[in-house]
Image (cartoon, rainbow, N blue to C red; front, top):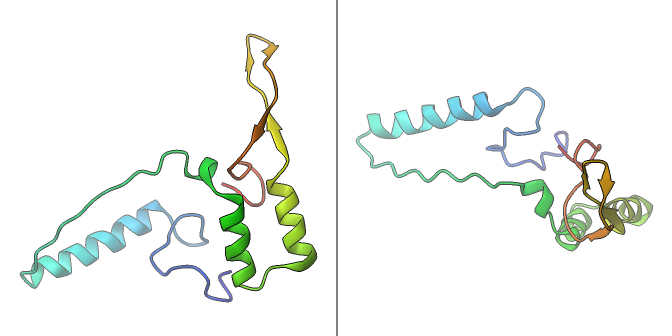
Length: 112
């Protein structure tokens, strides 16, 4: 994705050589330049809690198809994301399995 320039230049998370700190520095630099030019600055900070748990499979597949990822690789990614189940374990007791309807498996090659 880096080689094909598919990332937004403002994205710092989950990219080599970038971090939350590099994003903060870039943002601070941008705001400072605006203020030095006597421009107004309004800022809204958002925290998308559990963002990777809410990834829509079909939207993801459509976006991958739009950048040329389809065929067997697209099918593999779709099968990796869909038809998953999960259960909660409390005090050693496993609850009922339930279908995972969205999200990217965390700790996987496709997730955080």
